Length: 222
Image 1: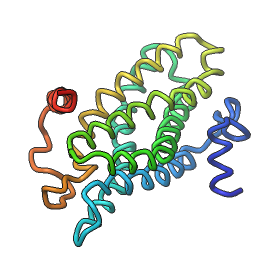
Image 2 (image 1 turned 120 degrees about the horizontal axis):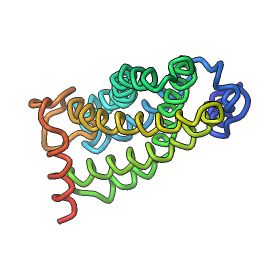
Image 3 (image 1 turned 60 degrees about the vertical axis):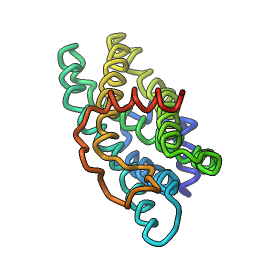
Image 4 (image 1 turned 180 degrees about the vertical axis):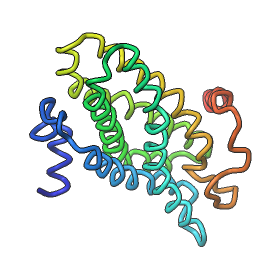
């Protein structure tokens, strides 16, 4: 089967990607989809700084960091998610629950890749770096919300067995948003500021991401 065919089956929930098939779905296969799609969006995301001499490195950095960001955020959330499942008496179903959350990463990345042309168009229409960063934040938020369709599809058999699984979706989302915002701040830049030299990471990475998000939002909306 072609890559496009496999992704189509994944989005439609057919075959091995159906709610029933997700019980035996390998995590590596899902991460393969997430890595490929995330890399593609990362290239476009890092293109805001341009393609002049030396700037191509930002594209390479961003291409690597988008799938890495998804994996780091996921990995940091898994231990707490496991504990909450255990406290609720749902530990025996954790393998399937983890597959559902891994499928979320793959779906999120595929949605990001599909929005890459929109991001490129926004870059051409946006002279302000802060606005470009804010736009990407909106894109990631929209992709995260849309990817819940896959989570709900994979969780359907679990919820049918025990309705307590429904609360675990909310637990994961809370963890994911909290960790994801800080992880994105630490791993910046993703977009690449044309007025600054290309760098893998920015100085002062360990600041408070939530304060920075509030300041950026105010700046863009003014």
